[in-house]
Amino acid sequence: MTNRDDLPPDDELASAYVDGELDASGRARVESDPTLLAEVAALREIRAAVADLPTPELDHARRDAAIKAALATADSNVVPFTRPTGHRWVGAVLGVAAAVLLVLFGAAVVRGGGQSSNSSASAPTTAAARAEAAAATTAAAGAASADASATLASPQPGGEAVAGGGAAVPSPLPPNADSSFKAAAPTDADLAALRDAGRRALPLPPPTVAAGCPAPTPGADFAGTVLWSTGVTAELFLERRLSPPTAWALAPGSCLVLATVPLA
Amino acid sequence: VAAARSGDRAALDALLRSHYDRVYGVCRRITGNDADAADAAQNALIAIVRGLPRFDGRSAFATWAYRIATNASLDELRRRNRRGTVGLPDDNEGDPAADDRPFDADVTERMALGAALDRLPDEFRAPVVLRDLLDLDYAQIAEALGIPPGTVRSRISRGRAALVKLLGNQTPFPDRPSSQP
Image 1: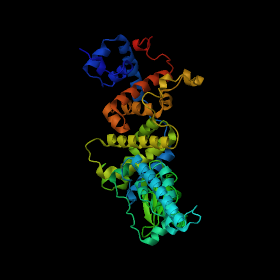
Image 2: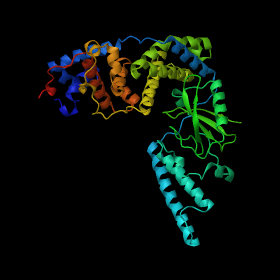
Image 3: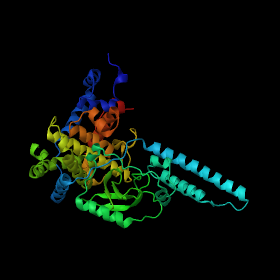
Image 4: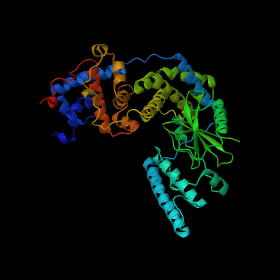
């Protein structure tokens, strides 16, 4: 006996039948219904026609460029990186939480200062308070971006202060062989261009919010875009706390790290 | 393939050239337009070169290469969606067969199947192409697209119905009992 509850909706039965994706009861249901069998015949024609579609006309110049770019990959020693996997919302939630906590903490510091001096306390007056306020601003801005990274949970009070304070330098992301499917390989010339662009972009103004991709490391700042010779556009980030300072290229959209080069 | 794997550049060049047409064809059908297909095909070739040392020969090289082309195409679609336009709708949204907007005369009267396929929204075109052109089963398509097999079934069915309609048959499946009042 056929259990109708286990079957796809009627308007999906014929298509699933054509694809051989129905169980015995589903097949029996279709084969007992002349209307569904007529649908099956029509869908088989469509399916055969799609399968027999000719290859669209090729642009030979683009074919040659693609093959050239792929061959250049074989000569490249660039190791692609990818971001650690994880739920994007976790970073966003942590970023928002950090921003709220820092704003509250900063407000408490300011209020405390006002009480002790009994003078105007409408703005932070101590270096620590300014740093906290700057950090809160940074965290809030980062949390508002599309993918706040987990690093926003422990924001640093400004790049220069951190560099001078000897804070722990974040390590580059670990290599991930699986990303090779998605990374567009830069040539040696592209890496040179990335290096030059990075040098020209130094020094950056205080922490910059990334245009499309989250920063690859906690201290990295967005610094514009670079264009590979293969036509791939990458977002340029700079990490000044590494020694030597390092430039990163991320693919817009997927935000995969395409390459990283030292600026020394 | 063996020579290319061993570092023979000429062999690699020949291998890429011999498969480019089909790789591009897969990309073109999945992405639905020339520009995205060219980008996806290039990324696919790069991925093939990078992955070649790990190609174990358990499947035919062509099958492996077309799977990479599929991944590159799907990445391109995701990128395109992120760039701002259309996200994948819920399963019950955006049924192309329910779209009654008028088409241009040349479209309604004689639309080639390829053009009709290009007109399908990404979320319908991709599973249809993966099924009909690459012969993947629903489980494989579900894995590739990151959606449940039931959604694959639904989207393929609706995509094919839309194709029938776009090709000019405004009543693709007459007298279906479930569609009658």
